[in-house]
Image (cartoon, rainbow, N blue to C red; front, top):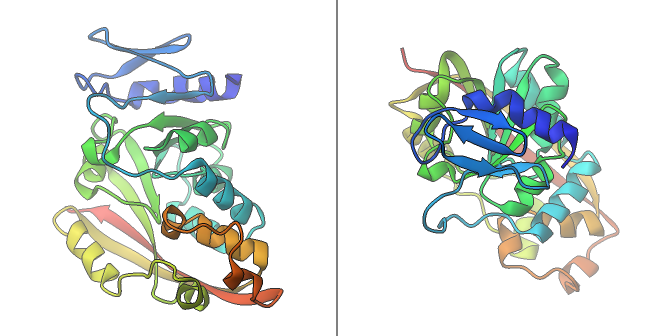
Length: 282
């Protein structure tokens, strides 16, 4: 375990909530222990698992999906989205939670732009938790299922972000401070459109915006909406990565896909997302 990952967990331990009793934690070397005596070991990879009870029904990303995503993100293809997320989060000296953090790419960008902030990268997949423990020196990695309830104390956070990930608006509202904000990134119907048909990728629900608005109503008001859309030049390896890293990666075997091999050496593909910012209702 790196000193940075242990330090990041120690810095946010007082904001985390024990999944057994709801009390806050104190760090004790390689363990987080709550006021009632429940303790959770910090894994040697630097994350803490706050999953309890029966196995989660959520399907997390596989190691192969995360490898593909890290490769794609590492080439900067989604950098304009990361910049827009950091701008929406803005300057804060509080704690930023990313729900469904994946590789921790977007949270790392937020923390780079907000040098006084701390981060919590939460994901339900162990491979993601391992990656998130080394995503940024100020990001603590937590393994948990957001749909069972966020293991965070009430009103503890200044910002929450969700990028291409499931979200639990009621729980986000509970853990956000009254002046906090929730940034949600969702794909538009134009996102990766040039690949969807030829490669049989999972399509974007055209009613996604309406469903998001309905889910947020009763908890949040939308205060800003920015469309980020641009063209990417992707090689065949990039195409394979972008398919393998998303929902289609659960179903597709791209190790020797003739459809990708038949593509031009470089193709232009649209990236198109909505970056929406929400505040809690009155």
